[in-house]
Length: 41
Image 1 (cartoon, rainbow, N blue to C red):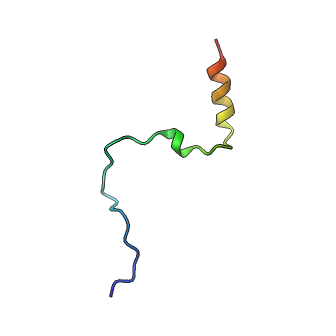
Image 2: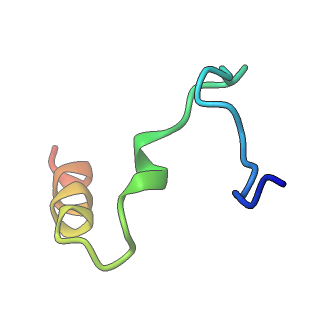
Image 3: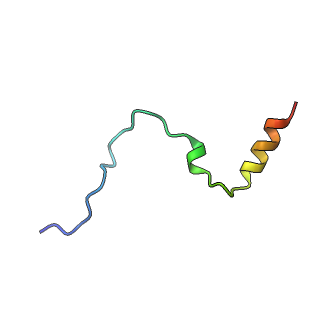
């Protein structure tokens, strides 16, 4: 009689590292700063 939602184990590891870019939303101001820094000489 278990009535909880089963998900992934908290102790499960991933093979590939996650990218920080995946955590930043498209409308985040850091995207503008990143584009500016990329254009610097």
